[in-house]
Image (tube, rainbow, N blue to C red):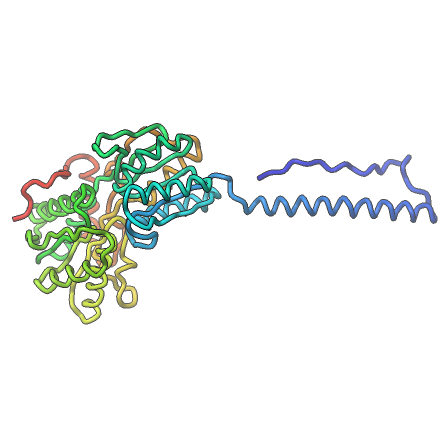
Length: 385
């Protein structure tokens, strides 16, 4: 914040010079007191300016979490990190609320709480917000909403994206495809599995893309990786850590070498199981999801059981939408898709668990996705043999 002010100059012309002697001393005293007064005023204003420099711009961004928390090492965390990045760069005030449940009423309650607190730009991660945002975009027409991985509808699945809402989707199948190619190339042979959270489109596309990536690597890159139907499981939630650990243990016991987990907290359970086994010398791997989960998989020194991660650049998207609003360019009423062509999905640029040769080959595959030479279906098809 800038404050404009003028200080009146003290007249020092010859006609206004003070006489010598006692009269001059009195005059100097008055002038001194006057100067002190001005300095006090200047100091007060300077302190006000210093205070203002720490204040936010008045643009308040809120987020309502899905079933997980902002430190779930996955979808919620990625979204929140983008919010924090925008806040730091643009001097915004931020706040997140975690609902007590996962119903439409729970989400609407927290959206209303944010709005009432002055947070009129609200980011919501996950398809569970679809009907809540459908209502909120009408109830709060002066607010802006970012719905990630879903579109507003009344329950009939007919999209209604109003001018104060933007709907965001990702090409998870492309991200899963790339992660599968990287995993297959690094392992060369053996069995892999998949653990999903809820059986919803975003999670299904990860699975279908992963299976296509395995098939592509086997047919074109000389690998010999198998994935059996019994090792493709949807746990049914995104927060049951214990269940994820149990499912991973069962797969590893059957000889599965790597598991792709698109399951939020359920995936964290699988990561924990893999870390425990790695500490005893067993070679098992997890393919991370949504964000680079390498750090979450560290079990000794800087060694991690995350062989790679199927990433959706959620943090970048939440940041971009906030910045767009800040600059008066909010894409309200639009449904945006982030894929390989616009660098919205991929795998981490660096991972010690992938050789340079593997990373180079994956980079080549990524370029072919961008040009359309390789096309990945977002449908299941007949992929499991």
